[in-house]
Image 1 (cartoon, one colour):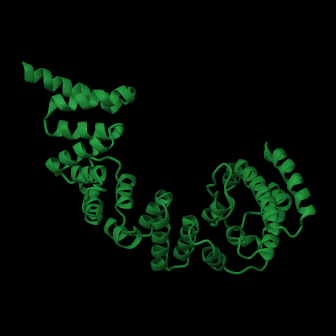
Image 2 (cartoon, rainbow, N blue to C red):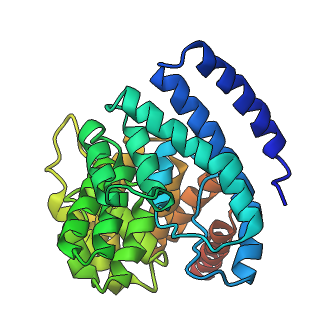
Image 3 (tube, rainbow, N blue to C red):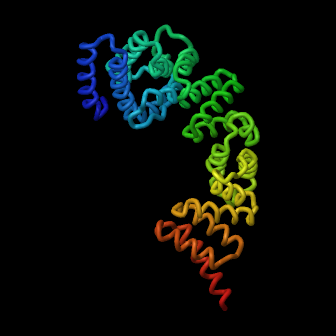
Length: 334
């Protein structure tokens, strides 16, 4: 079963092959052709993966790709092992994957400073009869493109597989220094490797307030039920927050942190400051309304909730809270 949409990739491949024929020594054109081949293979593989899983092919892991992965994203999927001997899969490898990898090798040889080639070869190193270890390709990719957080994440994952957890924590921290994009990937892997929350804070997360706050939201999305579990993340985040200055108060972050740590008076002060600075940040109005409700300031809470619902009328939680506030206000009048 060839993928339903691989025909469009065949057209792309034909055009890019024609371009490569005109400029065979152009590494970027070779890279573009390689991407088309591999994208075609991956699109078909997605459609085949359910059948492969049903056959319980030994060791097969369906890697999670984006609908059209960039080649750097392939680093994340580099845990694909040797695929079982399945005729349709072998045919797809022959038609798309092997030619794509050949183009990646040629592209790398023409321009060794292109990190994408090293990453792609690392991702599919199991396809080569003789190849360097996966880590070596990722080392090269990071050397020429150290700003890509996905490369650091991929190398950390390989380190962990090879029994080098300290190297993995280091690489994941480097990844998160560059972007929080991979937090949802890194946090569960760190937990599965046996780290508790405090160890994650100390070993994996970079000392950045925003990363710590986002980590708490991912691991413990229920602010009320998980208040105790969220506290270490929020305490460290507040500790790292620089002192407020006239030019940079960090009022919004400060308000949220103090609120989460139970300092309602301090949070109220900074919510007011933050709303003055960001009057159209309606999420701030909603969070401030929650604080005012907790402080039993029903009338002000109702005002903030009404303002918020003008801009998000379908928000069920806000509607529910507004109803509670109205009941308190009515009881107060009675």
